[in-house]
Every structure is written in C-alpha cells, then in structure tokens.
Image (cartoon, rainbow, N blue to C red; front, side):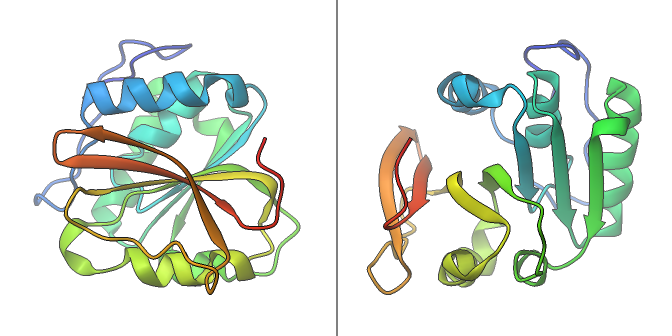
Length: 187
C-alpha cells in the first residue's frame, strides 16, 4: 500500500501484523480522494477504525491541515505512528488508542470537516456509529461522513438517526456511502 498523491506521494506504508486490517484498494482510495479534493485543503480529517492510517495520511498528503486517527489495536497505533514518521506528516496527525464510539461521544470544541468510517466488516460496528453521529459536538454543517461497507450490508439512514444519504459509489463488493446530518445544509 502506498500514498497515491500529494506531498508524500509514492511512500510505501506499513500494515499492522496479524491480519487485523483491510486496506482500502488503490482504486477506491483514488476515487474517494478525487471526490473529496475540493474540500481537502485546510480541512480537519477524522479517520475512524484507522488501521494503518492510510486514509488520514492520504488526506494530509493532499492538503488536510490536521488528521486524527482512532483505533483500539496497539499494532494499528504503532503502525500509524511509524507511517506518519515515514511520510514526514507526524506534526499534523494525532493518534488516539480508543474505542471509536467513545471517541465521537467526547465533548470538544474540535470540529472535523471529513470523517472516514471503515470498521471491520464482520463486527457490526457501523450501526452504533451511525446512531450516535447526530449527538456529537465534533461535527458541523460542513462535515461529510464517508462509510466504507460491503454491498450486502444495509445501513440505517433514517429520520430517527437524523442522517441523509447524499451519494453512493460501488466498487465491486465495496460501497462508499456519503452521508450528512439531516437538516444541516449540504455543501
């Protein structure tokens, strides 16, 4: 796996051992960042279930001001640290070894513009995240959420969880769902 574009273009990234992560395919990552490029410069990026940190590092490489990486696995945290050092982006990234649901429930003045949510497919973690997004103080009217999921996985984007699906892109069995919090402007 490598950084596709920007200041760290071409840097190879380490992967955590033990098969605990599922890296984004280059074509999925390239498409995602092509869509996000107009929002990237100066943005604050949140990489939930960060794994190797490849999505947040790609965002930093392409001009994001700051990226937060959240993962519970120590191997992932150590891999992200090594990848940030290797790409010389360590000063703009912050790593949190924490449960993603607990992290987004924090009360904070920090606001994220772009949030990538890529949980392990088999752990049923997407729904608990979706149920809590509208309650979080770290998101604004500009925040866009990108969920990576399997095509067969159904997501609840309903009036009850105050979410609206604004776009979806399919890549074989992988789907990227773009979501906003309902009743906030879509930019």
